[in-house]
Amino acid sequence: MRGGLRVDGDHQIDPRRLAGALVAACERAGVVFHRAWAERLTVVRDRVAGVVTADGTALDAGRVVLAGGSLSGRLAGVPEDVLPPVRPVKGQVVRLIMPQRHGPFLSRTVRAVVRGSHVYLVPRESGELVVGATSEEMGWDTTVTAGGVYELLRDAHELVPGITELPFTETRAGLRPGSPDNAPLLGPTGLEGLLLATGHYRNGVLLTPVTGDAMAHLLSTGELPEEARPFTPQRFSTATALTEQPA
Image 1 (cartoon, rainbow, N blue to C red):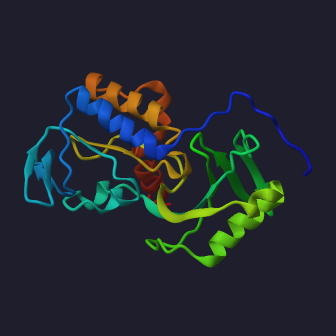
Image 2: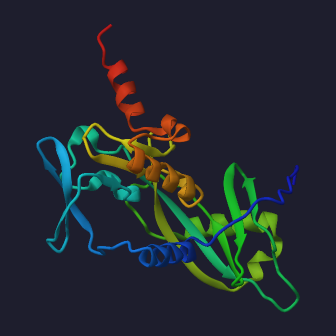
Image 3: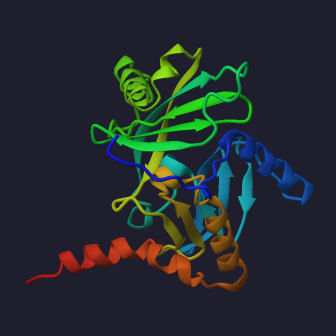
């Protein structure tokens, strides 16, 4: 290794457990969940009027927050000129089990660049070790490939050679929501009542708290907080308009 940094304040969280905890907390606070897919946005007189779910239920709302991850640009009924410019970016991960007999195999998160590729090893309290993640522009493909798994284990082995002796439990491929500049899309769109919270690319779970705070502030006051203003969806429509002006 050429060098490294020890960051004692670096933390990690299990997204699966976090999602379950957030749902439970919301239900305790009185939030009502409609678990059918949102199939179509309802628009009346050039403003949002609600959504229709896959089971045919019509839900009326004066404002809708579109936070559909990589699928955010595929909600029917959204006018083409305000569809979020979000693309899917494939990421493969590998999950292993660490032995607990002689203390922790790895006690802190390790992040590195190996052969130009980013790799991380994240130990969980449960004994799971997550190795990730590839970054592939493969459209909507979610196939786990031998090459992807090989590259992850190869690069992880460069950092922690003993990793190849660990039991193998799971592989998975997911789709990140990437925007044209790989930064989030937060705030109002050109359609009145339609708000975006998507495009977080590789940092979705990391930016969950600040995104929630920003959208809550917007919904309650009508204004985006200062830290979210550089990430409004209008930054792309403005850039497009400037490039399309005649010389």
